[in-house]
Length: 110
Length: 117
Image 1 (cartoon, chains in turn green, red):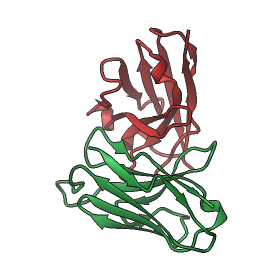
Image 2 (cartoon, rainbow over the protein chains, first blue to last red):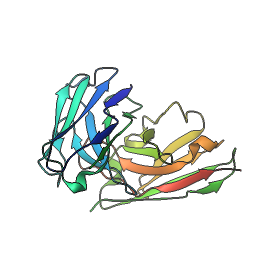
Image 3 (cartoon, each protein chain N blue to C red):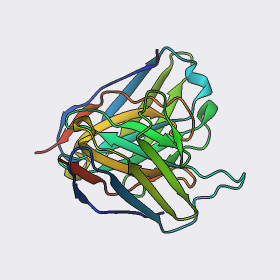
Image 4 (cartoon, chains in turn brown, blue):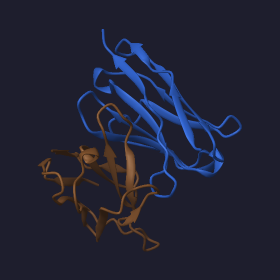
């Protein structure tokens, strides 16, 4: 399964919204009806951290300015108001099909 | 608190072997599907391998299939990745993590593997 993210580079202004798209080459709906599409954030020199799991569920401690949405093959991560700590690279990842796969990454910079 | 600590990385010549380990603590390791993910220098994340409960369902990315073996020892709460016939393109930081489909999700800090002559 190929995940295609866009844009690959995302310059943003503090306080402004940002949006990242992730498109899959196959449906990510599992046989039980759930959709295993997740979003990760990685700061330079750090391990990835999951922000959103199963399309729209925020992980513990993730600010509510992060919102995931989508279905089937098209998914979006939105940040309502970008803060300085949001810089880094964002990856979508699918866990529906094994082997799992990641998107190419979107670099968000202020 | 969940913790994963990778070890076993290092410098190896092309064609050589390494065995990575990932020690888990703070959670019931045997109840979690586990994965290995790698990141080449300056590149994105690449899912390498995953293993289910009790060692079932070991799966590999095409890029490592036939050269890598994932295993686990639930009695030691440890995940392993045996890597053989290493190539320059295997140079990367290798992370272990719990299966991303469920919560909570935990990643280690990674261990660096460098393949070079």
